[in-house]
Image 1 (cartoon, rainbow, N blue to C red):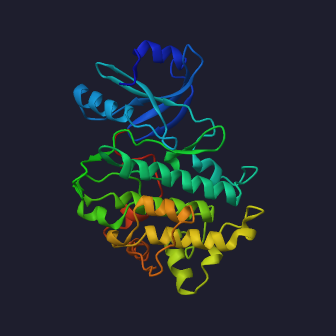
Image 2: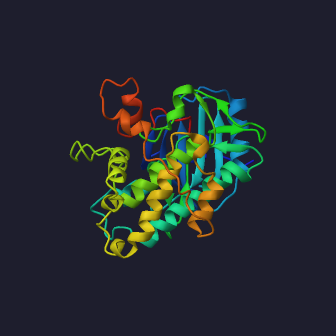
Length: 328
């Protein structure tokens, strides 16, 4: 088991929960420092709707997961109604601040973006394929990718995701995740590991294009990134959606194009046509090519064409504070 802390330990470590790092649908995260000088991020769980026994079982599972590209769980607190998770502190914060914030200087260059994408893929491949019980994250989005001192990317908030036995191909679950990152099959509430692949595809697009998947500040024609990808594919002008704000992006147009095609492969409507994360890692390492027969017709992009679509809000609302997230 990870280290067990008392509530008082964490209250002191966080200076009475003074510095808030972030907030989601199931809790707030606060910066703290342990007695030995270790920086931590303490997540105060709220509205999790589970008993102490289930919480401790989840903590034990998370505590046994160790991978360089996953944010490490250091410890926990379980005192009556108080439940907290204690994670390693990630000094450079969320990917959101570096990709979408135009005031950042310098803007991440192509090599940095490429490494971040590979880091995310490696973390997900471990959760999906290398754990004793496979773990479907269910909330892959830029907000949940954190960066350490050296800009290594680590997947966070996989804590109370959905566990799958190795002999299971799919599971039934209630809807969770963040609008804009949800795969089409969420409509049936029977999901596979491939829902994470879809969300990863959206994140890859955001990293390469340097913008959110839904940006209301843009024109009607370009505010939905997935729809824009679909339209540019029709025009054979995929290069138009690549982020031009970084000085050396123009030098890596060919690689960026391949990355967009990899993202599109991950975004296939038919989940059986999406790659496994281990295949994605091979593509990124240059050991495998992207599937050549890719469809650029995305049902989620078509949903943006009509505000009367029943699933319009599900698919296209801006990402919010994990309002549909699994408990974290």
